[in-house]
Length: 168
Image 1 (cartoon, one colour):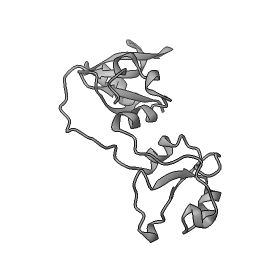
Image 2 (cartoon, rainbow, N blue to C red):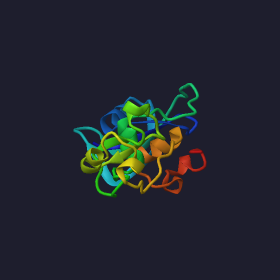
Image 3 (tube, rainbow, N blue to C red):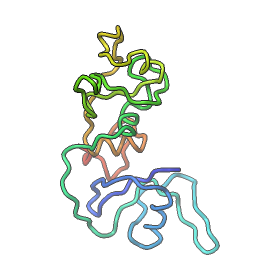
């Protein structure tokens, strides 16, 4: 199912929602389509709507300021683009650089995407102890970066026109 970026009335990125939820918001006149997938439309008996890629809420929604993106397994896989940090193959799981049994936590800087084989090979050791090298270093994305990564955008320049300069 497609993900749609939701912008606040002032063009600040808020979250991503399913295609169904985005269409409902547009149909209820709670949001307008800012950018649509070219050539794709949703048709019903009496309505035709472009498939939204980015929608903007009509009314401003006040949200508490978030300095940090919340950690999640899905977020780590998206951040690392589903590539294993040890071998570069398709990643299906998350590995703790410092194992939880040794005090490592569920944080952006301590987790990387990993394939099952490398995760099992590393086991309950650090990469150095297992003789493995990280191809990419873990980093903590900003909330705006996390949204762009979730949408599959490679960099800020690929962001929709209303977002340029706002995803700092």
